[in-house]
Image (cartoon, rainbow, N blue to C red; front, top):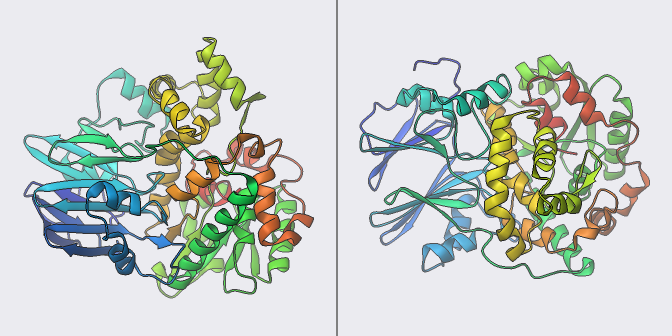
Length: 485
């Protein structure tokens, strides 16, 4: 290995070449590809006849919380074709890669928000699929692109994303990221979109709320049945919805990271846990130390004799449950209107700043391309375009990298990372999902645990913005602290 700082325990490499298998990796043949997996990556195999499947990571089925990966795979395998099979995965949450093979045909896809990333490279007749750009650089000897466009991209994110740029491109020569909700056809070397593929059926609150509640409760229960679960709790809506979906008096470990001027957040989190009869700890955190060593910072909260015996429960912004947005005082609908009126630059600059890349010409160009190709699709399907933008650009970079940063210590469970849940949330009228009218969020908490609404939500100053002003590196501080809001 040329880079000893790269952590390989949960990485993978699929290759048609003959490179040497790294020490500690497992190796198997999967059609035309050799599959090399780190020793701590969960690998599940299933097959019938000529069709074989590899699951890298974990699946959670809200309908059958007690099901293992093997049982979920068998349940999905009732499909007669790849298209049917992939639809059968929509109700599943998790952070995962699926490798599907039928004869010589091999296809690869990942979770809803691409939190388990797929990077691929084809040079000199050899096809490679890897889990991280640094892994690709180490194993394949890739060099950074000299194109000034990608050089600016790398420079704009130095110290935060370490080479993960929004969009398909990575800043390395001939290395690309698999786009969200696309599958990679290995034989044809092309990407194909599979989601969203049809218009949404509109739902009223009375229909959507019980469905959302059932899904979240099922996903969380499934995670608890496999691991000890720790929940990074804040006083925000997304966090409260997940907390209301946890069984009272369960063995869930809740913690709040205490930063300067965040005492209200910690006290509110403790009050929430008291209502739910859950244990809670506050951890005094130095942001710089947390960025450098997440596990050391909170090991007193989630300590376990086996490092993979803890699963961090995460929420995420823009999960679809909150469809409105306020960018510098501009609502999402106004953004769409400004786009139509030709004020595209202001829109792109606002979103670029919101995503943490202020004045980045690279991201602005990616957003320009994204708007051109996705606005019409959003219009046809009814997906709110800001929700989809976060799914396509923000999660595969900021959140995916944060998960890769610490997943060698703990596993991660993201209940919102489900296509069926995303569809259900986006099926609710946008007017019930704005920051100014968070009725959908309120109704879900009311349905699950109304007492939690008696405790203030997001009081005082914008703590996440305070944090961002103090933290230069986004990982994993914002993942644990800001993403659960």
